[in-house]
Each structure stands twice: as structure tokens, then as C-alpha cells.
Image 1 (cartoon, helix red, strand yellow):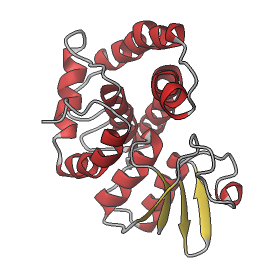
Image 2: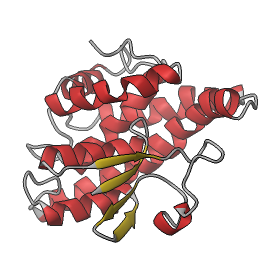
Image 3: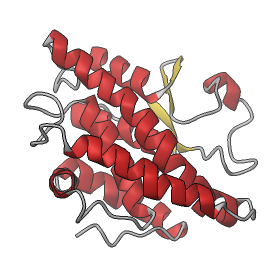
Length: 223
């Protein structure tokens, strides 16, 4: 199975982690849509939205990280990333969607594009007001919501789910951008630290290191 994307991507990382946890081999093809001329010429055939990640599995193409993880779940049901319990299943998908909006669209995306993509890739000055709004308003609101959940080892039930993959993946990029959760949100910070120290996350972070270094991202949160 081929995955198109870049490991630093919040959504691509979700798919890579899910596949690794399920023991599904992936062949990576680096696609960075924000870099002009980088995507392959048939990119819109592979990803109709032009976004990453996308996969190709014996001729079957699929884009959207959540849809891909649901596909991987059918291919290899164990370990399950979608709970069997009806309410936990719904809660996990709801948190995955929430992470795509309240974390990615409201926090990570505006900071990343104005701090990294604009000035470092497109040679366009970033908008500091957009960064400040995401950092000082949207991030505390989202982190406060997570802090007030019954935050233990996992977001839903007693095992890792798609919800954890989505939230942790966003928090990783937040840290790469030079920001931190602690000390304002200690329970969320403990949750984050616990997960990035798991074998799957440590392996993913090690693979991402060359990309992070090339983009001048902050890896000091990794011990």
C-alpha cells in the first residue's frame, strides 16, 4: 500500500501510525502540496481535494485520513482503533472530527501557514495577528476542553482509538512550532507526554526528524 503525503503532516501521521499499529506495510511517496510543483502531475486523480494524505492499494485510491483509517480497520481489525461499543464508537469519531476543526483548522493550520509556509516556502510574510489569535485564543479554548475531559490514558474507553491519534498528531505539530501545553494544562501535558513516549510514536518521531530539521522546527520536546 502506498501513502502519499509527508510524515510531518497531522493527517498523514494519523495514517502512518494506524498502519504501523496494525502491522500494515506502507510505501511512502513524499507529496507536499504547499510546495509549488511538488505534487505529481496526476495528483488530483489521486486526491480530488488536492490534500494529503491519500493511499493507493492495488489500484484502489482513497483520500481523507479518517476514511483511510476506517479502510485500514476493515483490512486489519486488530488492534481496533474504532471501539466496539456504540457510544464509544460515536465518541471516538466525534473527537476525531473535533480535532480536525478545533485543533487543526483553528490552531495548527493558521500558525503553520503563517509561521512556516508563507515566509519559509512561499517567501510571503506571515500574518502575526493570525498567529496570535490561534495561539492566544483558539489554542487555550481547545486545550481547556481537553483538560476538562476525564483525561486518563486514553480519550475514549480503555484503549487507543482514532481520537487519540488525531489529537496527539495535532499536539505534536503544535510543539514542533515552538509552543508548549504546560504549565497551563497539566493533565493534557501528562497525556501528551505519555503517548509520545510509546514505541509507535517514538518511531514516527525519529522518521520525521530529517523533515523537521530541514524546516527548522523545534524538536526539543522529544527526550
